[in-house]
Structures are given as C-alpha cells and as structure tokens.
Length: 397
Image (cartoon, rainbow, N blue to C red):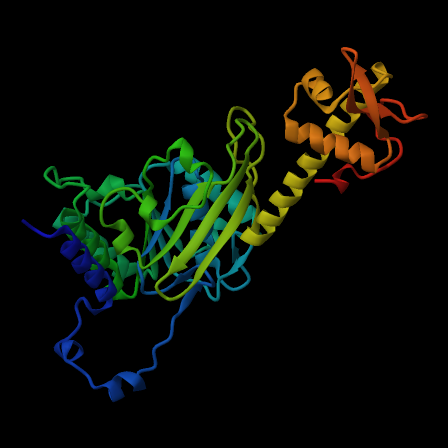
C-alpha cells in the first residue's frame, strides 16, 4: 500500500524544486555552502505583498466569491504595471506579459468585466500586453501541453492564469481520483513543467470545498481547497470568501482575502466591491473597490456591536420608564421583567442605568398585602422614547 503522506511530501518537493525542471547537468550537481551563499537570490514581486514570480499561486474560493472578476483585475494590473494597483491597493512594480485562460465565464462576460475594470483604472484594454484564451488545456493530454508550452515561449508570457482548474485536470483521465494526492500530483506537475522552466509563473484558479453553516462568513485556509494536492502544490495563495451574505440585485460584495506564501508574506484583508445595481437584468456596470485591513474591519465590527448594545439598552430603559409611568405605585424587578418579557440580565442593566440617570428610585412597593423592594418613577420624569435629557445609555454595562 502506498503511503499517502509520503506522496504528499513528494508533491511538495516537486513544486519547491520546480524551477529546476529542464536544468542542465551542472545545475543538478551539488554546490558548496560558500557557492550557495554567494548566489544573488532575491524575490521578484509581481504584485507587492501578494505575489512573487517563479512560485505557483493558487487563487481559491467558493462559488460566487468574485474569483473571476478579481482574477481579471489581477491580470489587467499585471499587464499594465507601474502606476496601476491590484484592487486599488497593491502596487505592481512593472508590466508583465500575461496570458489568461478562462474556460467558464464566456467571452461576452469577460469582455464586459475587462472594459469596466480598465475604465476604473483609466486604461485602454486594447493597449495591454494581455492575451486571452477561452478553452482550458487538458493537462493529461501530452500534445495539448506541448502546444501550450510552445505558446508560452512564443508570447514570452511571464504569468499564465488557468481559470478554473477543474475543467482541465481530470479531462481525458477517467481513472484519476481527485481525492488522491498521488493521482493529482503528476497533473499539477504538468502545469509546473509547462510554465516555470520558461520564466512563467502559473496562477491556478480553484474552488474550495462546500462550506457548512458553521463555517459562516469566515476567512479561508489552504485546507479549505477542494481536491487533493492543491494545498501542497500552492507555494503562494489568495483565498477569497464572503464576509457577509450577498443581497440579490445590490451589486455589493463584502469579501475576505487571505494572502500568503512560502516567500514569507502573510496578510488578511477585507475587500468591498460595488459592481453597480442590476440594469436590464445584468449587473457589473461598475468596479468600485475598497481594501481594508483586518484590524479596521474588527474595529468597525466592535463599533457596530457597541452601537447595537447601546440602542438595545436605551430601548429597555425607555420601556421601563413607560411601564412605571403606567404603574405609579411601582413594581419589583421581577414584576417589571415579567411584564416586559425580557431576561433577568437585560432588566438588571436597564434598571441600573435608569438609577444612574436618576430617572427611577428605590422604593418599597406593596403586592398581595406584602412589602417588597421595588422601583418607582421619580417625580417629574415621564416615560418617553426619545431620551430628551441626552444621557448616555451605555454608561452601565
């Protein structure tokens, strides 16, 4: 029986050493540490903080997470370079020759996305060093792979994007098992062999496994990629997922984008995209993008949570005042809580806040001919929902 873990290690070794495919005999020899230390080796950023050259990149995400749209932004940004930024955030040091293979979206949709994104970046689509293809190669077909390799060399592509990978991986490989790393390894290696020996960095666009309700709208990890081998294959990655559910017809998307790689870069971002509202049944007339740090998103969430808590506390205080105005003889905490139908914690917070604001006071109240500790409305205070005295209801938590 083959050890699957051993197979996974072999796949990782293949990818790490992929740049040596096709190397001459001298390059395959051992070199001394002194010679190795003397080598001038630096990472070449294709997109700063996101992507370096010479290492396979996997862009992953569930369905409808704007993978293709963001891939088009990436391809256009790479082809334009210099003053262009990927997602209006990440600098592209210089223009690159880019090939984009898209086998799923269709020419009309891609052209509209590309023109919209170019307009937003003040670019002319016609002038970009970007070449398009609309049929995925079959990675198990030797002739197709050789043809693709020749095209990469002819166009001197520095980046080639494959979107989506599932259309080409298992085609003409009926016996291949997508869940077996030993089956997937040679197919992914064919991508490496086709690109990296010629100075071309491959980008593989891939789906993630189906996420359950417990996953929620969370940032993704490499383990969320579907099919075997992709997590091991990826030397760098961009993982997309939703931060909030999409409202049909709004054209607005709130995403997580996790970037990382073996070069050492690692970051988590929020990406807000406004494609414009649906017109004539089709959205995508605009491409307004804002990238936020994960810290700013957490801060926004904290402010939103605090505001909700403040409004909830204000509401219960107003309800207590209205109730006590209707019951001038007062009532106990239990009586007020049962009348308003809230929890003990909520009524305690509301009563404590009203006491601090001096809107109610402690008073002995009579119920069933017995006296109990309770509360009454202070003289001059009325039950009203608009908080006229301007007190901050969040003063007591």
